[in-house]
Length: 248
Image (tube, rainbow, N blue to C red; front, side):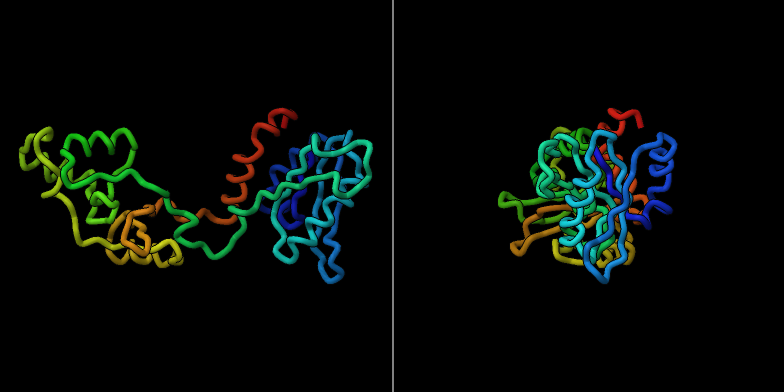
């Protein structure tokens, strides 16, 4: 396997990874974007068995394709390299930046899709069980067509229903639903959603489609990490097993 790391990232977000490769004396080459006016350069750490010329020629078309928005990382799996061929097409570089590149974030990019919902006729006990099993603090309340009618929180269940002394097995959540709710749509800017959360003092915002049906939910905790944390998290998630395989 080879990993192509953008030069500017080698000194910032991925410095620790580069230090590990350097300490392990991993072979490396440099590849520059073939666009004449572009100075973007990558360091490619690779297995000793991988052909340097093939790596250099094979990565170049990907850099041209992604110019000028060069990704932070490419992963080049060794099995895709044809040892008998010197064609650039013999390598397949997998970019790891779709979710880690810093861009304008939309609600659809961060929302939890198809959240667990409940209906007004559900019992307090059933709703509490759903929250426990799904490890969530609130549930959108929908009608039979999944149109959003309100929201119920763990506080509604624990404080209001319990304080009223009702039988949780026989009492529906209908009296405890908050019907006046703030919503957003998938194409909203995420920063707008955060403004709604702060303005109204809430923790979650349901996401609805053009028919008013609940298709997602956004929480304050869904706020994107900084670019450095985002890069590191995605890299670890994507190739942790491969790094372990090579003892890194």
